[in-house]
Length: 538
Image (tube, rainbow, N blue to C red; front, side, top):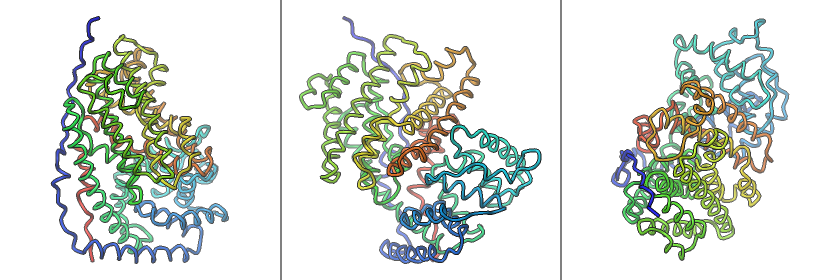
């Protein structure tokens, strides 16, 4: 039997190289020891603010500031107590901003609030245009936490978007910038650390500005940035060894982007294991994906899949010579991962291995489709590609590394592919396929969801993409609903899964594939997060 031809593709090189290995940050004006001591002092003062809140609105405003400034992770216990107090308190306000802010905060934290609370702000014609701009912005952001069966919220989004568009050029800072960002991407769907950077620069102009909160936010960001820089150096060194050892020149060098993606899920210092292990899993998956899509013959794809299903050193003999080192490194990573988690948690690694095996099966099926020139239906394509987008595998990998924040029941839940994981996967798949299609297909894989939808329905590119973007809106509703539908014990894992969906616009927003193309926009984001400290005034 003649060997199948090898696939060919052109992939863009990484702009980073050894940048993070050689980069030496400028020494701060104050020592790290001083910064940490000052931050600890400020945390104590912020904790006192919880005790001095005299009203429900004071608590809501404080919680919103802590979240927006990116320092809420230091006050989890106090925030949970405050949320219970907010839920249990009578609340009545004639100010749209206050009602919308309460609605958004409670829904984000898994507490149900009826959309009927907005009815009293409607004009006789059903619009909201008589309300002040800040209230409209808060309403617009809150409305994007809608769930299925809330047509009134869809109407709110449409009406208020029109109002904000018409007034955006006449607003003053910081509201003008906040409105423009929300119109580009509403607050519940933003990469939170990027939004934190924006808000830190704006917070001083806000009503109720508290200098202690701002100073803590700046210190915390800069201290975490130093932690993340050290991790980026270590993982880049790991990648240089891995890339040189396995010798696969056809794979994408995306270790920095993988770390950035993992950081979108876990930026907190205490989640270092989760952040680093998920980033490494992304790298290993990228190698496997590029092998199936861009290089291996169909015979080699089958050999690789058989080896992954066996998951044993003895399976190395099944593989072509060029894949043997990669397979050995894959097994070695999981051995090290098992040694890094707590002894009592080592059982969790088996869940992640199983998902890697499933993922290989999905990649294999796509390779068979490509080999047979199979043209799947749209439904068939989405069913498979929502699994091969890797999010189901990475969700399990991230949950397994979350330590005491999750239980075995959480892993069992994730293994059933619950709706929030599948909705996030479909968001990822549609955004990825739309961005790749707009850029021009560069990978040697099967038909994309966009191509299948166009072919099946006889539509132009623009109409097909518009319909798929509407489908994404339905999946966003499912992610919102998961905060209420699932047991509250699962909420920490649910929130991290939603973080995956929220990270997608950074890499595939605006119909652009920043992951494959190493876009200037993504490079600027990475520099602002990891390289450029926030200026301090001591």
